[in-house]
Image 1 (cartoon, rainbow, N blue to C red):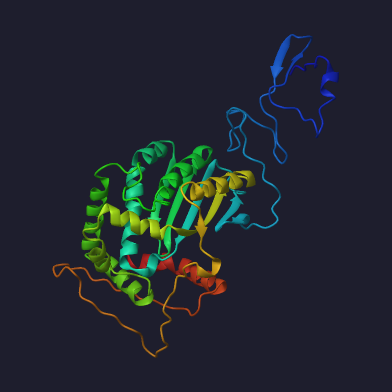
Image 2 (image 1 turned 90 degrees about the horizontal axis):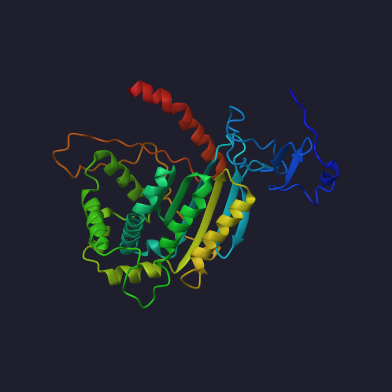
Length: 367
């Protein structure tokens, strides 16, 4: 083991907390026999900055990029980092696995989505069009272990972007830009430029086939029937099929512009990200919301609620029996639903725990 001496030690006395040593600083050892350059400096809360291959563990880094410092936890719960303009962004930094992965989930609530079957059908078509237009971008991202999805909900739609955090926000920016390009199109009858010619008819045909084939599977038909009984806002596939059949591009654009005129957005950013990354995600989302129009949010008291019918108490049970749509289908599905009373956090946790305990032995017994 050989020790080396710094040349001009006095040059290093000036560095302190106010004037720290920065990457790029150069010096020499043993009377200029060896030269060195600082390529990485540990930030507050970090250990040593390692180069790839210096240690055989998950803390290996490449090019001096280390896992971001984790502040001491006050509460192991998501923290609200942005709450303004009908946008809420929550953040939780990964403290356990320390992997270079992130997960950004965005929920968009739309005003008036449940007013008609046409609105809900147009939302389904909207998600298909956006997913179709993003196919090439998302495929290239998936090669780099970045995934994304766009799906409808009962009050609007949701976006999820997940994978390696280095370029995660770049992909989220692309997805949000396309989705929000449907806003602010008053007086126009054309689709955004990202939607290629002919893709509207192809996506519409695919959606119509989905509606026509809905319920052909006994299990999905059974689940859909239960939701129709319990959720007042749940529209049947047949009603959506009739509402959207023969729709034109002009009518679709007008309908979507009306649905997206007033929105409320809530996001959650979790994983290998610090609070500055969460604030950056907030600005990306806010920028997309305001890029094409003057943003109008939904007041908190007007945000659509997910209502569930309270089943009346009886000694026996409420039974709903229906034949399958396909008379040749030999399969039968039975679904039993238990309602535990008005929803609250404690009851939900207890029910989740009960399901977790019963799931494996029930599966093993049925198998």
